[in-house]
Length: 406
Length: 209
Image 1 (cartoon, helix red, strand yellow):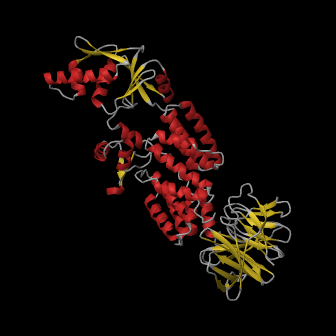
Image 2 (cartoon, rainbow over the protein chains, first blue to last red):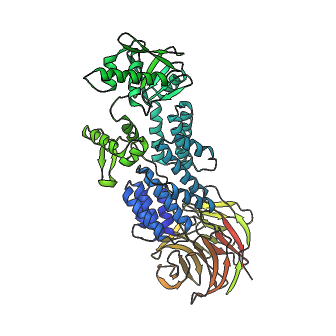
Image 3 (cartoon, each protein chain N blue to C red):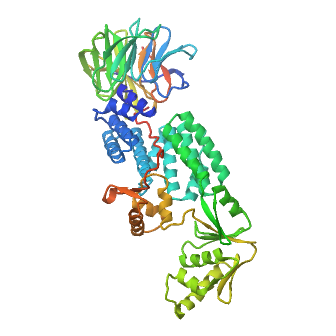
């Protein structure tokens, strides 16, 4: 409805943010501010983009509700792209309701997808699945469809449903190509890499081997009793005992699992689980107490039997016991796993996503930075962390059109 | 001031590969509408798209009886509808140009958020005079020596007949809630053709008598 705005929007849709800026760089009216913000976001200047979209939302009149709602959605997407997850989804939900009521179904669906992607990054899989259940994606345009399929693939990967993940990624690839957005195709491609990259390590009878995601799924389907060091749980055929909040018990279980069918000496168990070299009788008493607790928790899955020199696991139903570990065992694995998405994260977002305290995440980041495994930029509250750049890794931004009434 | 509610006679579209309808004009037989990367010729009787011209078409469209005029980013292109060739280009006024009309031997440019209508020299693009409106201006058209323009503000639209000298609003037709007007043209008789912006539709509205 305004030639320069339309021209700029057309440039943005074609993936040409500089062309878009060219059209509206000198204008400070609300739609121009919004488009400048979107262009800056596509150029990865998230701080500037956020400020521009905020001023655009202010500059639109109080009754230009649709345009303001689109600014809120765009701002939420920028927050997501910069892995700032601490925001409340309330204003996004409100914006989505406005767009839905005013018949802007595509942007309403886009807002919903952003909300779900935030939950997925936070690892709230049940909430994600609940939200996905109510979605009918048939009317989505290709770009939004691809983003939706990426969410489905993300859930399937985290749920170890590799066939479902592969199918979703194939659909996402087709939709991304239909949309013709290179960044989106790259995102699909990098998501697909996960399926062909070792996801875990199998430790069995003193041997080690790397597993793909589908092997992990097959292992968890099998009759083996799995000491899962990725999620700190013991998995039987149909029972899972989580020891995520019992680190000492998990360490004991893992030591016993790695040694199975052999036993492990008391001294080794004490030294590794209690992290001490000086062993006295109080440690032996404590070991007995902890083993008692472990025995009680695992009683349906395995016996923890005392031997002459220590303890050994004797499975009740399973034929073997294996240990599933991260592909590369290193300290602060959870933090590194999140950073592996290639985006920049705030330490508070990492704390939210890992469930650890912000202080301990900060300590982890500092020690990882000392080892050159992560890098940061910005300072204070705007400080962001990421892995050293991997070529070709992008973050999609499918920002909504910001034309009033369009 | 006369006031009424719009009576929609006909609705065309949405059309394949058209995200939004910008400018609209009428050459006596077919409706032309701008959709970003092209101009589309629509048969009002069948609702079919008869042909398209590949030319960037970001806002208002007008017809002077011989040529199409099309606002494209910061300029106005004069197009031969037969060959689709751009025969001349003039600069568009500075600002948020939206609507375009031909009338009184001049081009009339509606400016959206500037709430203005400029009369400009079709040879040079020079501004001859300016009419102020109190609403965001979308499409502009002349019919029987009456100047009409569309408005789209706060998610509401109406059609206004204004005094071309003073800008005074003489008549107003309100659009139903949620129905916006981007481009505007009359068929010279009893109908207005209105672009529907992001709805991707073109609507025919009865002109009150």
